[in-house]
Length: 449
Image (tube, rainbow, N blue to C red; front, side, top):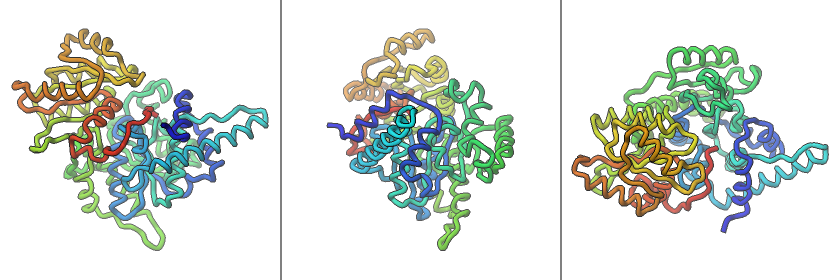
């Protein structure tokens, strides 16, 4: 049976995504501005936000700071999105704070209607952002690492007003909201620093994952806002559980952000950044579902989980496969959402896949199996198996992969959608030590913002 808080949250799904800060600001005011009771660091970008946020939160925690982490979407359970020191928000606290936000929204609505206005109807993501702010404020955290949901300037996390914003990468996404070019999207994301020069002035951007003309635009825009712009060097000596050079790039951003933040702290007990401690933390800090290797009891890789869900991310996936598994061809379990450029994703992956296994979950935004099959037929790719995702289906694909003598012991590659990865993790969490974080969680409603 669902709690009253979760019922309220799910009622917000009908409002979709509504870019803008009016609702969030109104609710923050009604709730006593919890977002002002802790320091915050923003993380924006097309891809790499989650891993950068996760690495950064771990480094700050290791330096003795009580650290909040706000990320989206979740993979298995909603509580993953709101954490303190790597522990998810307790279910009872989540429910209580959801109802607190509901009460505030109803109070603001009554005032607006009495004044001849309209009711306040916050979105799913706005409600969760307010819950995170309340939880961090009442828990007395030192700092929150806030991953933006979409864009930056109009994303509800922007109201926290952090002094540091990390920009991880820029690619074409949500062009109907963020703009038709990478330049426009860059400005929208950097807008997290504030919507006027007065609000943004003096803040610092730490920028990575972009190059050339776009990097110059980032510097110019930061200058327009009166902000600093730092482009850190890539720390090639960093070691991570997540495969791929792009994770080394993201870790480098997190190291730069941690150093800047820690060394700027004042008061009676300032914290000095320790680079060796930070690198030690990163060695064991695996961001789930992103080029994550799951090993069997013998230590051999059995599965690679990667949430590549757009062309930009698939390009990084392919680069990583070329680096770690040159000339290899994988069995691939693939599923994708309806709004993704599946044709382009498949074309990039095709040289690295010997067997395609297509799947979907009941989530309504998933592309139908018939549509996936048609996309593959158009590219002359053969589907080896298909079916709704279930334990039986996944185990069948794993068996086929392990029994294929031509496969040369390669792991099964699972990719195409974070939502599908979450469903796979729910199935596999008791079978692989790397997924122990998810044990004891029940699947809950997911929404991409």
